[in-house]
Length: 178
Image 1: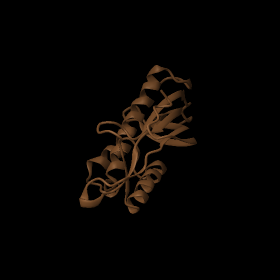
Image 2: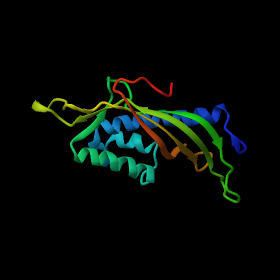
Image 3: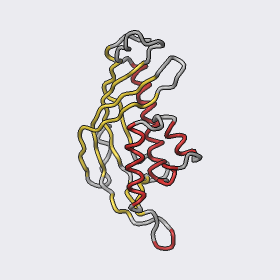
Image 4: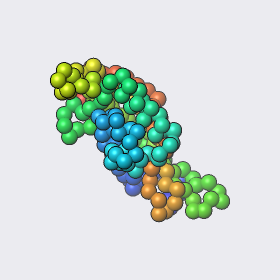
């Protein structure tokens, strides 16, 4: 285990790879909001491979998805095969493990820049096809996060992803985190 302090390139890669998986899982779950409550759905399984089931992050995000679903809304990518949500790790810091805990958990704290080019859309339009777009603004956000690994043989999981700033940009804006 690396010492506490500024994260190295391997730590940054761990965080970014987990954020990439989070973005894909969140994109998929947001486009299929019915999966948020279906334990047999592989979309929810992919989500829980990144975000611990029952965690504050899990409940908060799935609660927002449920709320949109209740209003007949979903979020989908602008183009098939792209993401509705993108987070980029910026500064990564390795936290010191708590004394006396064996095996010691690993924790990386980080800052992030994110954007959401996805489209808010009604669940279905006339004739059952895609519904109309109701939100095409691009969200740009900054925040902090934390990834944790309880032990050396355990996978890294996203512990927190907190937003500290949010700005809405015009539709079609390019990635401000570039």
